[in-house]
Length: 161
Image (tube, rainbow, N blue to C red; front, side, top):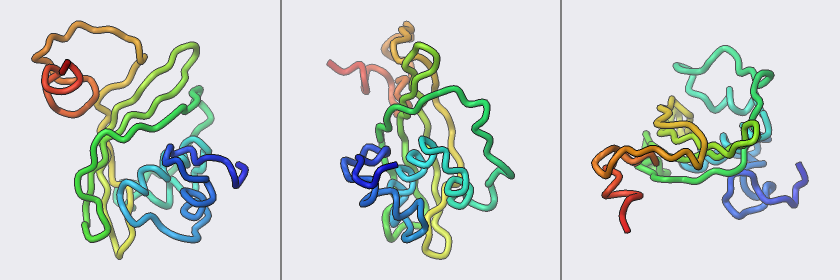
């Protein structure tokens, strides 16, 4: 990746000023959100070493295998942040990760949990709330849970006009 290119995490900073110092080990993310963004960029770059290193040891998988993945990551959209600041020990980041699979643009809604150990943030685990084509229309009604993963009713979230 060229140093002068925009960072893949969508922060509007250059890669060299955003996620590259984390990926290279020069520095560590100071917030759960910064770790979330850097992990997304690592997924796009298929940086297995960084993903493993930033996964909490209690939940870290033995290996990450990208050989069967047939998607192209497009962009990251942060939905909600709970705690996860410099002085916190836990944090939650809800996000939408958009990707291309076959001929469809898809989105994955996830709520990720982070923990800080010895002053450093780690990804603990996540719950995928929904996954599928962006333009998939479903009739869930206004009282159904919103598909964006907010936990709110559709009529109080994305259904508000």
